[in-house]
Length: 120
Image (cartoon, rainbow, N blue to C red; front, side, top):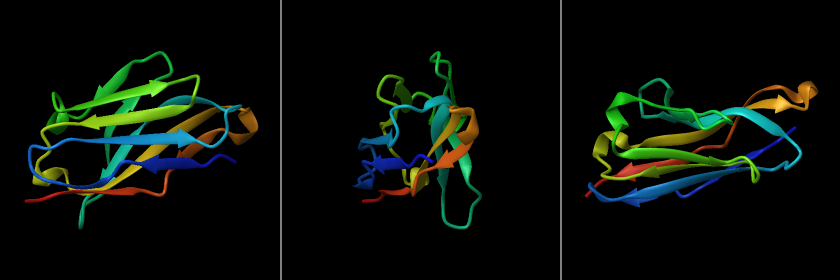
């Protein structure tokens, strides 16, 4: 088993920035895709951004140009830099990772979630 530990959420004014970080608890695991989902009140959880081990990334249109995803394969970490935040970005953000190795533990894993609130 592996845990994903998130940090960096909080309250920020519109136009502000936050950086979310997620670290896997096992350094001997290898991950395929890693990324971030979010869930706003009354809405379904949605993928915000993902990145493969080779660095190919995907970012949803509403946050393109404002959010940047990055990862460190050696440290098993993934980060989401969020700039020019707007109230519509308010949500619980979840770290997500797909375990590749060991194959016995392969599958999707989730962090516990971190609240991001954009409000004046």
